[in-house]
Amino acid sequence: MAFEIPEVVKVWSQFAHPLFMWVLFGLFIYALYLGIQSRRTRTTTDKEVRKTLVKKKFGFKHHEIGSVILALMIIGTVAGMAVTYINNGKLFVTAHLVVGLAMMSAIAIATALVPYMQKGNNLARVTHISINVVLLGLFGWEAVTGMDILFSIIDKM
Image 1 (cartoon, helix red, strand yellow):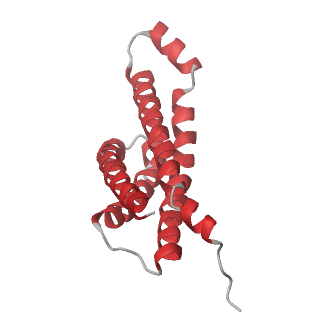
Image 2 (tube, rainbow, N blue to C red; image 1 turned 45 degrees about the vertical axis):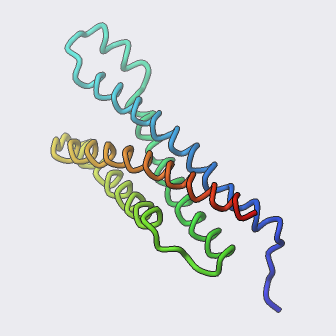
């Protein structure tokens, strides 16, 4: 006997991925703010400003939230694919799926650069920042296309 998922769970599960990813998009923007403040802390020449910024631990917070974002991005991507498969018996290979998978790979690469950045490797830092700026743009695009998908699901209900 195969395990059957109740219809109500199938229907409402389709809303979990978009909600989860919008929260993640907000966290991503917060991480950007922390990264900018961390860079400001590192590069300021004003000793008083630096002293104030160091107390706020922007670098630590940026690193911490970045780790959380990496984990949540993987969970959100895989969960979105799982829900789609459960509800449709297949995945739809669209730009939304392909870009989402590319984003998951890119965030893993950006995170993998952290040990090199901590050792002062400027190329790693520039690459990390560049990847994350592209990710932010792609995240915005994914949000728009994801809402289009969500509205088409609602129309079918």
